Amino acid sequence: MLNYYLKGAMSDKIIADLKRSKEPTLNARLNKPLQVYLTLSGLGKRLQIYTKKRISQYEWDKDKQKVDIRKNKINGTEINEWLNSFQEALEKHNSINWNKGKTTTIEDLRNILDSITPSGAKKITNTFQEYFDLFLKEHKTNEGYTKRSRTIQKYMTFNNQLIEFTKIKRIRLELDSVDLNFLTSFKEYLVKNKNLSDNTVAKYIKTAKTLIRFYINKSLIKPFNLNAVKCVEREGEIYVIELKQLLKLQKYKLKNKRLEQCRDLFCFQCWTGQRWGDIEMIKSKDIITNRKGEKVWDIHASKTRKPIKVPLISYAIEILNKYKKDDKPLPTISMQKQNEYLKELGELVSKDNIGIAKVDGFDQITKHVLHYDGIPQENYFPFYKILTTHVARKSYITNSLILGVPERVVKEVSGHKSEKDFRRYVKFADIYKDEMIRKSFSKKNISKFL
Image 1 (cartoon, rainbow, N blue to C red):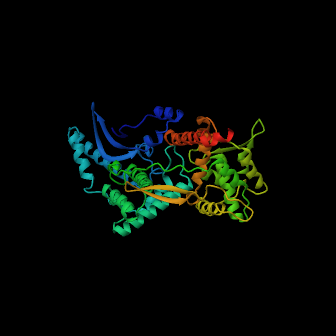
Image 2: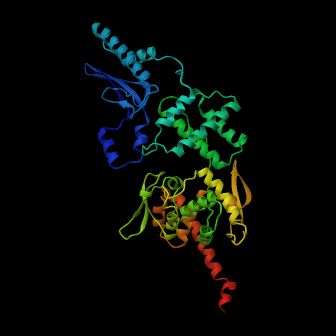
Image 3: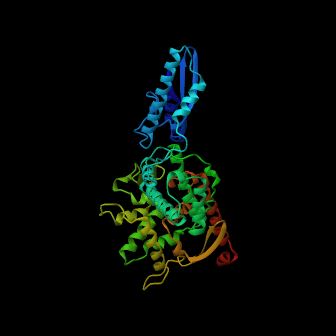
């Protein structure tokens, strides 16, 4: 009797138990390529041999002992045809041996395997772009969710960089050219040719490794040590809008509607601490009233897919009331445009205008450090030049901690998954509180009461 099986495959019971326990690594384990083995049983003997094929458990139909071509459209049919040909060759050889009164040996299995396995690497016929489109279509998060549109856009930007790299370096962009040298050269190109910061290089290389792992799991390219290409992503500075600045900014009278909407969105993000992707997707039905009659923003975070109930303080409600006659609770602006408008807004409010006092601190010269190939480079800009949507989120977290909101509560509302990332804000807030205490108890300040 001939049978195919995956070496190291999990049983249905184990998979069911892992699903019930919501094991985060389950999807990765199901998509890990496993060796396809053939067993030959008969006359009290059992032979087995590795077919030199690999397929993930997710793509394998254990009942049919074949690849599920609905889950592997690239080379599933080809693998199945090969498995059929190997099985037919073995059955024919076994029948001949039976008629001669002989038994099939493991050496026979090896010889037949070698005879039907072509020498050299398999020729890849699809273009790189076709395989990249497959990646965009099939790649999921570790939890099995479909990638968000913003993440897809990130992959498209990466793809453009990759195409530019191969053109400049005159490298053929095909899957069979993707190896350790290819990845190393791509990193050198980002560092030396594009002169990108270490953090930006790290993000591109991280994306490249995700893409390559997908192809390795599909058995489209040969595995290699991805960890050999190392990148260091350094912690960025934490920039914060202080509460007195925020209150003054929210009340600042703007004649430009575009900048007014930009300001309202920014302030709302400062009062709620949510990611820009969730600010963009806010709907009227998401604003609910709890049993105490308080307004709450009830969302499923777009990045973590977890439910969050954001308490809406009075300043946030003021902004929502301003747009309550509109179809959406807040104006719609793309993140790219919002970041562009924020710098224009910051420059405007940093100057004294007729009858309107400036918002202090937006023109303050601020140090901005980026690392290039491990070497720090310091630059100094007015604060408004570094204004982004990330500043709003960081301001909410830091201000909440300064005001004494428990860390657990802040973390729940902000939706932080990483304890390491969150601790940075705690440390920053503690330093800020220390400075406030020293300033309050300074000799100059105390002398006012003497």
